[in-house]
Amino acid sequence: MGLPGVNRAPLDVAVTLADEAGRIATERFFADDFATATKRDGSEVTDADVAVERMLRAELRRRFPGDEIYGEEAGVTAGLPCR
Image (tube, rainbow, N blue to C red; front, side, top):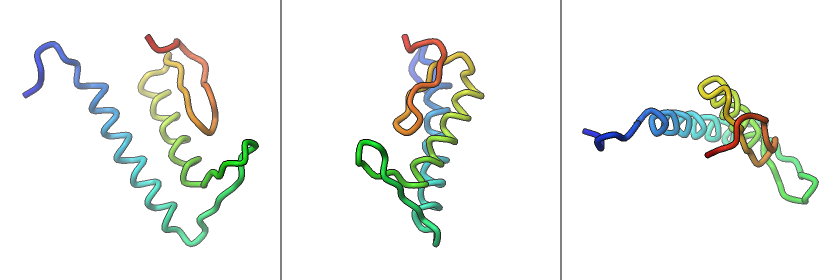
């Protein structure tokens, strides 16, 4: 039972994508070929970080094609800014 007038669809998408992100991260962190790199700012990025962001960007673009997307690894993908 939801709250009256609340659109659960965005929350359902977020939960689905969070579950998939967790699956990808777990799979990559325990892989034999787990890899890291150093970003220009000196911080570390893992192949798991990149894989998760890549999946999230692809799914968000597919589900919300006009929205702007912000991410730590790839920056901003153009679209309509958040309101």
